[in-house]
Length: 387
Image 1 (cartoon, rainbow, N blue to C red):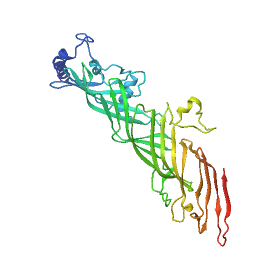
Image 2 (cartoon, rainbow, N blue to C red):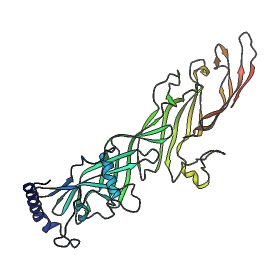
Image 3 (tube, rainbow, N blue to C red):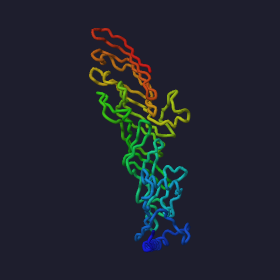
Image 4 (cartoon, rainbow, N blue to C red):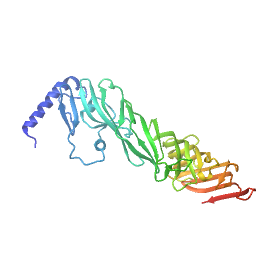
């Protein structure tokens, strides 16, 4: 029930505000004199020089993950979307502003203060990661909008809270403070990510290649400016790590590309024959994962030389995606018999080969020479594992 005294007071405040501001600054050819303006679910609060539009009490609304998601859903459900930002846009909030058919980068205006000749408003954007439907939220306040010139300086919406999103089965990306969205009079402009890439601690662990000691999670920090959240090609590196359960070798990805794009792959990228997922022909662009252009492979410490230094070599063109690690790794003349040891026996590694396919070790081979205790004549050895 609304008491008459309170209703009269609110009507009086509304009339004063309207008479003070609207006749001089908000009337335009788009409005007929006396036309009713609707402020759905919002209250008007009069100030000396402005109309302040803010959300009414939402305690009766359903509980949601985040208040911004509820506002965005209201905008979508009620079709509160425009592709024209002008003075009339601030008359019924919340309002989504999107240019073109793609509403993925729509900003939502949820608060505005109208002054003579211009407005200041607050807006947010919610990006959705299609892989796990996680939400990344950005916000900007005190955005200037001239009724004659439009957006004064464009809009930069800043990350509200750091957020972890899935980019493949065993890898995630953290959006960290400093991430932002640039938006101007033509709509979405760019996405700036200040981030951290992190591999699953269930599958991978950072190691010291000298001792094999485990050192925690595998991650790296990066910064990138992208034109599209679905079109990211990012070159990064990862310090030495191992796959849990496989202790014969460690990997350092010294140059790799994170492919999070539906439009292109990294230069020189290709998939091996019979690769699963249906990525063939033009569909190859849809592949997502890590394309390792150059890696350093360290053999475990039992293959270290006499000085205790790990035996290592380079590998190229490895893949790591939802299926796991894929690639052929090998080297000739890896360790001479003068430097190599297995226990107290001199040992050489003349040829080493290791093949992974979709995360499984398919083959492992060693060839070389071995001098057993009490002997001076090297023996040839050939060790091979075939899955």
